[in-house]
Length: 441
Image 1: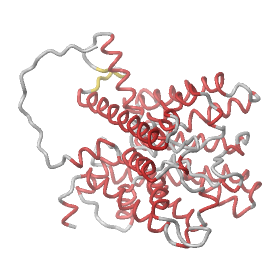
Image 2 (image 1 turned 90 degrees about the vertical axis):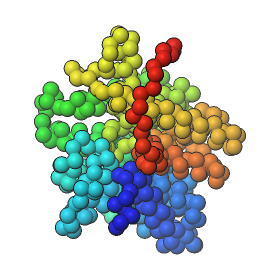
Image 3 (image 1 turned 45 degrees about the vertical axis):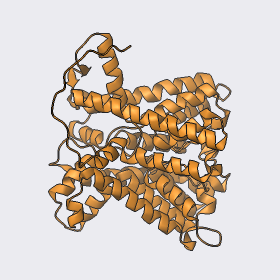
Image 4 (image 1 turned 60 degrees about the vertical axis):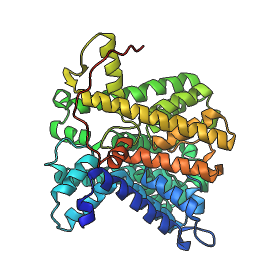
């Protein structure tokens, strides 16, 4: 269509997500989507659709008890498309139908999955589809014995598939409301199959398809990996290990040792934009809540099913600080240096996320008359597309819900993508102004 030819890749991405959110909301408003009489209200439907497409997991209605089987299937479809990426899904459909993928579509796909080269994006799309199918089906098979034993054969299979897709896509939606509304996976905190499967799926989906492509190419030869893959592995490992150690010694000391280890690792992994929980988060101290907020904001890695600022952004910021401390001119990783544009982008992303996170929390706290830390936890969960909650989301007013919707949307499409889309018509000023020294610190 002519209108799409005039649009930039950033504009196509943000409109694609918006269109799919609206489609999901309309489907969820149908009477067949809910268990009670009549369909969901537009406010509930658009919040749920946004949360699903943006793979967040925050809900205003319990997924298991409010939505019917059809409604749950719609939510699962939204999660799957949102996890893979709307553009990836569209390119995959076009490719499978035999249509030629244009250069414009390839460019959009490249930006959507943060690929370095435009030439292999179609082949990479096929790899993403296969990888997604293999891991989601494997996860469902691993969880099936536990869910089938608890809920019966057919319902157990459905629960296994639903939670496997939700976990791989880092979405955090669950169907455990049949046990207790908004209980997430707390009833399975001691189940080794559920813990292993969910932790593995969250981690696999969160490290990024580009990293998995690197693994496919170079196998276990870590030295041959790209600098980005090495940074992703190192940063991800630290972001799991450090909070897990704190949870083990600081928050979960009253549990038996086996369950204590499982819950510590689970809570550390799930804060990386997954949204499941096997522990009562309201029982955590204020320090524990604050510790969870940090990895929630960081999120997963570029080109993954996870949201957040991304692990590479944090790594660049920390490495830049270390370079300044050591009076080095450039930021270094594994014997390679990063360019100044990357450092500037990382600083911009940090500023943007902190502004959205703190600003949203302040507004919700003031409007709802709730503790600030609780509201900051909720906004960090939304902008990081995590889905963890301290239980306040269902009771929020329309303004606060609208803020969370905006944060989830920005967190999924990416703040820079939205800015680039808004400023696509402006031309950069190439003139160099006179330089003058500015004292900082």
